[in-house]
Amino acid sequence: MTELPSARRLLKSVFGFDDFRPGQAEIVEAVLSGDPVLAVMPTGSGKSLCYQLPALLGEGLTLVISPLIALMRDQVGQMRELGLAAASLNSQTGEDEARDIWTQIRSGELRLLFLSPERLAMDGLVEALSRANVRRVAVDEAHCICAWGHDFRPEYRMIREGVEKLGQPQVIAFTATADQAMRAEITERLFDTTPQIFVHSFDRPNISLSFAAKDQPRKQLQNFLASRRGQSGIVYCASRAGTEKLAEFFATQGFETVAYHAGLDQTRRNANQDRFLREDGVVAFATVAFGMGVNKPDVRFVAHADMPSSIEAYYQEIGRAGRDGLPADAYALYGLDDMALRRRQIDEKPLPDERRRFEHQRFNALAALCEAASCRRQTLLAYFNEEAPPCGRCDVCLGQVALRDGTVEAQKALSAVYRTGQRFGSGYLCDLLTGAENEALRRNGHDALKTFGVGADVSKQQWASTFRQLFAAGALCSASAEHGGFALTEKGEAILLGRETMTLRADPPREKAAKTFSRSAQRGQAAEHSADSTEAKIFEALRKLRRDLAKEQGLAAYMIFADRTLLEMAERHPARLEDLRAIHGVGERKIALYGEVFLDAIAQAGV
View 1 (tube, rainbow, N blue to C red):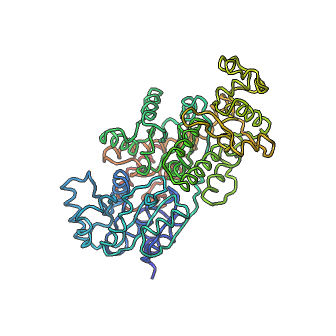
View 2: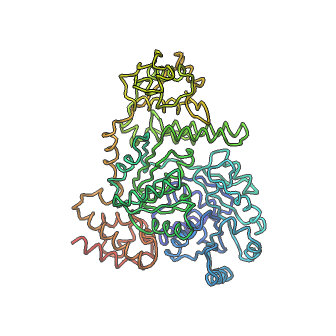
View 3: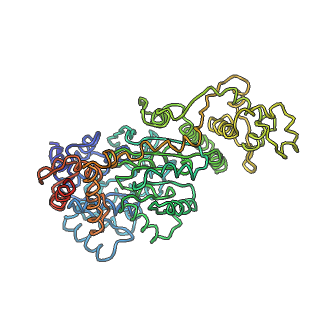
C-alpha cells in the first residue's frame, strides 16, 4: 500500500506545505516504492524534498551524496530547524560532533546523513555504515558523474562501488540539467538496474531573461544593480580578479558585497559565503566556483558580467535565482572578445574530433541565445528539446530588441573582411567602413579600397555590433589563434554572394539601455505593494524580526521563514496560531518556535 497519504500529512505538519509542487508527488511515490529513481527537475522545483520526506517515513538511514560542504551544512541546518535528525560528516566535522553523529547512527535516531563522494570512498567508512541500516542513497547533482558535463567530478564515479559495498540499498539520483545522453551515462554509471526516470519541464517562468552586448560593461552593471539595492543577488565573473575588482567597486557605490573564488583562502571563502547565505541584501561577485553550494531561496537576480561558458552552465547559474517561486531576473553581458575566446579555447584543447564538434555545437547554441531574434525562453528551452509559447517577459518579448533585415549591411562588413585579406579585427574594419582617418589604413593601402567609407552613414558602434553578430552566427571565424582577426566561413561566403540573408539586432542606444531594467527591479519584494501600505510596513517589520532572530541563533535568515512566507503573513494579517497554519511554509515546529513572536510583530506593525 502506498505511503503517499502519510507523506502528504508530513508535508503539511513538518514543512508547512499544503500540497506537492508539480512533479514531486510521483517522484516521492516512486522513492517510497523502493524503486531506483533518476529525476531531472529544474533548480528551485523542490528536488531535496523528494529525498527528505521519504527519509522521515519508515526505518533506516538515508545517505545523501552532495558535492559541497556548504551545501551539506545548509541542508542540515534547514532539517534541524524543522526538528529533523540530520547530520553531515566532512572535513570540518569536529571529533566530539563526529562521536555524537555515530551515536545517533547506531541508535537509529539519525534519518539523513550528508557525505561527499570522496568521504564515501574513505577507508573504513562504508564498512562502518554497512552496519547502520542504510535504506537508500540519494545522489544530489548527479550530472557531476558525466565526463562531458560542465561540472564533472571524477569522484562521483566511485559512488556505485560504495553502494555495492553497502549491500545495494535503493539508489535515487537528482539533477537539474541532463540531456538524453547525460541521462544514459548517469544510468550506466550509477545504477545496477534501469531506474524510473522522471524528466520535468526545464522552464523557470518566474525568472525574466535579458541579454546585452557589452558596451561600457561596468556602467551596464551599475544600471542593472542601481534599482536593486537591498536585494540578494549573484554576479558571475569570468576571472578571479574580476570578482574582487567589481566587489570593491560596488562596495564604494553603497552595496553590501562579497567576493568569492577558488583562489581565496578557505577561511575567507567560507566567511563570504556564510555572509551571503545568512544576510539579506548581499551581492556576491563570484566565479563559477560559487555554484552548487548556493541554496538561498530569496536570490532576486543573477547577472553575468561575462559570457557564460555554455547553455548548461548558464541554466544552472540563473537557477540560483527565485528558488522561492517569486519573480527574479537574469541578466547576461557578452562581447565579441568573449565569443572569440570561447571558440579559441575549443580549438586549442587537445580534444578528439567528435568532442570538438560537440563543443562547437554547444558554443553555437549559446551564441544563438545571446543574439536571439525570438523569445529567449523559447530559445533556451528548445536547447533542452522542450517547446514553449513566447514568455512575454524576456527582453525580446517586451520589445527591447529591434530586428531588421541586415543583409546589405552584412555584405558590406563581409566584403571588408575579404578585401583586406581576412586577417584584421573589428576595430580596424570599423574604421575602414566608416572612412576614418587611420594611419594603418593608409599604410596598408586600404583607404583606396571600394569598401573604404562605404558605411560612413552607420556608427562604429553599430558596425561593431554587426561584426559581433556575424561572428555569433558562424559567418565569421577567427583568422588566427595568435593574432586574432576575422576570416569568412562557408556561411559568410553564402551571405556575401547573396545565397543567404541576414537578420540583425539593433542594439539599443546607451541612454535607453540604462533604463531597461528599472521597471521590474523591485518585483518579488514588498514593493509589490505601495511603499506606504500596511502590507509593506508589516513585511519590513517581519524581515527585521527574522534578521534579528537569525543573527541571535546563528542561522541563515531564510531558515526562519522564507520571503514568500513573510509576504503571505503581511497580506493575510494572521492574528491566531491557527491562522498561521494556513500560511505557506509554516509547519508545527515553526509555529511552536516562532508563532507568538511573529503574531506580535504583525499586530504591532499593522497598527
